Length: 145
Image (cartoon, rainbow, N blue to C red; front, top):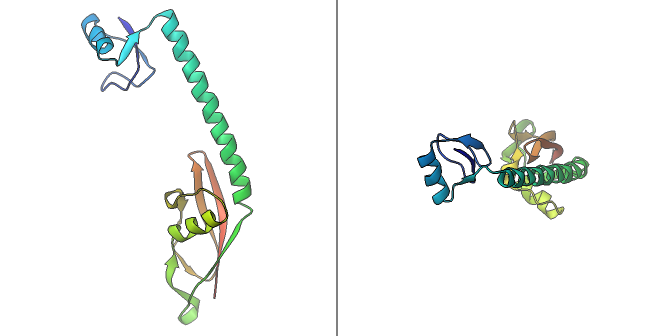
């Protein structure tokens, strides 16, 4: 029996997959609402849903790219206390950077910010902001005395 999965089914497939299963198991999945019979109408509906999801993803990536262009023009400046040889007491965290970006009007969470090396010295540092898995912006952070 050919069925279209409406939900992820363990050891069978993911949502939207068309699979062949035994008749009894297929009827069980249909009764529990986890699948429908793979008829022409069902396949057409599945293709339309996949097309809508693809368009939505393209729109999301396009909007993330626009935000990336604006974000990369930004320059964040943090005033910090320093000790011997201009070493910063503590460091600037992703949370502080996220708060500064929110003050500028960006909706960025601290989990989206990646700091490869701790910001513990004066000067310019590059920080990555992941807007989407495929869209990563680089912003400049300056630490001043």
